[in-house]
Length: 242
Image 1 (cartoon, helix red, strand yellow):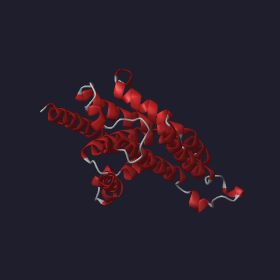
Image 2 (cartoon, helix red, strand yellow):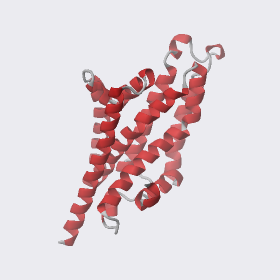
Image 3 (cartoon, helix red, strand yellow):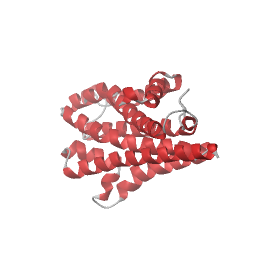
Image 4 (cartoon, one colour):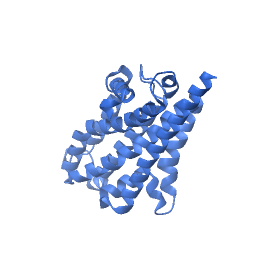
């Protein structure tokens, strides 16, 4: 639990209150606010009926992609949060490798959920304008958080494996493109591995068996990322002790 994990507790405090973290969240909310503004009824001169079709779905897809990017970018250090320690820094701490690993994965999961929660008022506005069910918003969040936790955990691992900022950012963006764009081009049912496809299906058709299966796979991937982080921390410490 977060209350028992000092790594996650400290990381989340910095991500929710740090100067750069506040800027990051502000930009995220500003984008969502602009999208909500564009959803105003056509009689206010915003969008015609044709362009408003599927507006809630488009809004939720954008929110998902932004939440995943911001979570993973903060985790790998591409967006540096003041005071947040990387996996390499924590390898020199007294925390056991498992605590470090769980803390990093928990941080990504909770931070993504926090972003979605902050954007909830805008989601409600868009859903209300379009006459959509709020359950669609909850379904999108239910599949987004495990995906963000997995990719955030992988990002934290990248932050430990790659010393160069350029290499770390390059691999991070390559991973995002592969997950979001590359997976979407796969034939069915493999295209559900794309978070965009996953959210679209969850919003349109509900939490079907295939949606739940892919969501569970991402949850398992977050555990695998945590295990890899723990092994890397143990390897670093073994090297220092030689």
